[in-house]
Length: 347
Image (cartoon, rainbow, N blue to C red; front, side, top):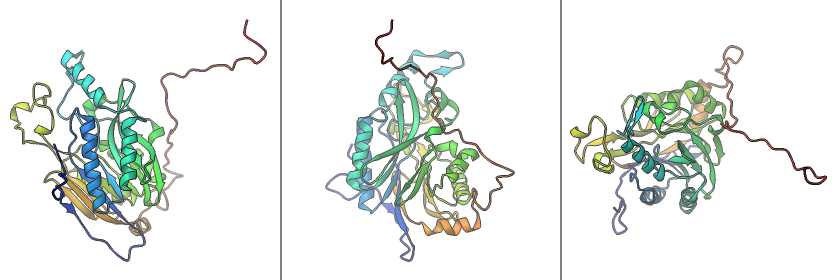
C-alpha cells in the first residue's frame, strides 16, 4: 500500500500555525497521527520513512510518532487471558506480537537512526521493544545526525497491557539536552503519574513528548495541565486506526465489540495535539484521520511561563515536600565473579 505515491502530492495536509519572527529560538515540530501496519514491522518502517520524509519536506526539525507505532498497539485483544487460564490461540497471538517487536539495539534501530540522519530531524519513535521474551512499550530518541540517543521504557503499563508488557525502571527516564531544546517523553497514562512528571521537570524537560493510545477528549485536559504545570511544550501523538488497519477475524478479534465493527469503523480516533507552556493549543487536536500536525515552538515561551510557575524551582517547597528517584537499573539476577589469580592455575 503506497501511502505517499511518488507521482502525486502529499497525502496528508499539514496544520501550519505560522511563525513568530521575533522569537529568540523557534523549532518546527510535527506529531504524526497514523496507524501501524499490524504484524508487519518492515512495512511499518517503510511507512514511517514516507511520513518522516513528508514532515521534513514541510520543514520539521522534530518529529514525534505515536505509542507503539513500530510493533503495534494491540487494541481490542485480550490474548486469551482470563483469571487462571490462557488459551492456545492467545499464546499464538503473543508469539506473533513478540515476532513484530524489535531489539534495542538492533537492525530496526539502525534503520530509524539512518532515517533521522537522512532527513536531518530529531526523531521520537514509539516502539515495542523485545528483550529476550519480555516486551516493553518504549520510546526511542534519535538526533538529526542519525545517532541513537537512548530510550524510555513505560514504567507502568495500564490494565491488560500488564499481561504483555514489562515494567520500565528508573534508569530509563531520560531528558536529552539538544540544540532544539531538552527532550523527554512519557507514554500514555504514565503521564497521569505526578511523581514521574516531577522527575522529568527536575531534569529540565522543555519539549515534553507524550505518545499515547488514548483518543478520548478528556486526554486533552491532561495534556494542557502538563504544559501549564511543567512550563513546557507538550507534543502528544496518537494513532488514527480503522478496523481494517488490523488483521481480519478470526486471525485478530476485537474482544466484545467485533460484531459491531465494519472494516471502516474507527477504533482509535487520534486527537494528536501540540500545546504551549501557557496552555495554548498550537495545533490539533485532530480527530479526522491520518495527518501530520505541525507548529512552530517559540522556546522563549518557556521562560515566560516559568516566571509564573516553576514547579521544581521558585514554586517548590523541598523542606516540606521532596522526591527521591531510584534511577539505577534493576536486574532480577546479578552474577558476581572473582578475578583469576595471577600466580598460576587454581588447584
